[in-house]
Each structure stands twice: as C-alpha cells, then as structure tokens.
Image (cartoon, rainbow, N blue to C red; front, side, top):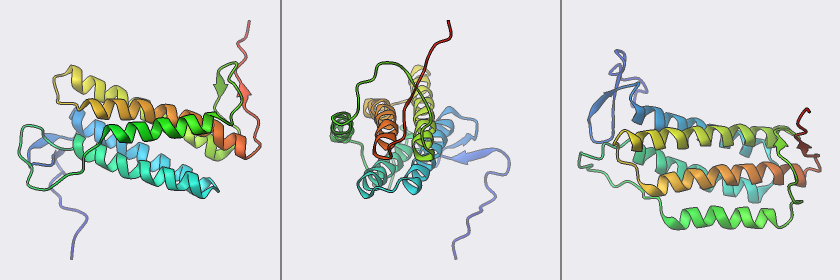
Length: 185
C-alpha cells in the first residue's frame, strides 16, 4: 500500500525530480507550489461554472499546468529517468485562439474592470492573480540563473490573459453586469 506520508520532509527539505534535495523554501519549490495553487483555483472555477465547453477548456489547462509543474520540479542539471511531458508553442496558440473567440462576443472594454459579478467570475480573477504571481516567481528564477524554458513564461503570461477574458465571458453568459472601475477624483 502506498503511503502519502514519507517523513522525509519533516526537517524542511524535499526532493526535486532527479533526486536532488533542496530546502522547501527554494525558489523552485515556490514556483511549482504556486502553479499547484493556480491549478486548484482553476478547479474551483470549473466546479462553479455551468458550461461544458468551459469545463473542458479548464481541464485541458489543468493538464498543461501539471506539465509546467513537472518541468519546474525537475532539477535541470540531473538526468531524469522518467519521461516527462513537454509544453509546446501550440499550447500557447491554443490559449490565444480561445481568448480571441471569447472576445468576439464581449463588449468593448472602456475602463478597468473590478473583479466580481458572480462567484465563478470572481474566482477566475483570483486564479489570474495567482497566475501572475507564478509568472513573477518564474521570472525571478530566471534572474537567479535557474533554467527556465521560455514556453513556461509565455504560457503563464497568456494564461493570465485567458483567465481575465474568461472572467468577463463567464459574467457575460450569466448576464452579470461588469463593474467598471471609476477612479475617485
């Protein structure tokens, strides 16, 4: 029987794919932990939205986020014995196509939009914010000299755009009014 606990992390360390031990505070752990958090919020959006096409898209995104997480959890200096999935440029194009399709039916934006409208839309905004944080952590990794595939940065950047447009689209199909930001003067 497989046990979920190993006790090997009780002193604050963990292993990357490839076997290298690092502290749980390592930026690589922070990066894939944030991607995991993002994946969980996307799961919440999927559970809240009552639209099979959107649910199917979100499941596809969750699968890609596992791909991103596995890349981030791998020590690039060690040879890995298992085959890991790759992120492709077509994954980024796929997001762009969905953004464009949703934008075809959305009203033109004339101001910044406050998160809200309904629970699924609001949760989509939370996912967008977590996605931006994941992107910032990945950029910081790159700046620290950690290997960072360009596709991961592009994917996270485009995914945050997708989540913003999806939040608007969910509001639109649910007839929830968007709340424009009106700056206090």
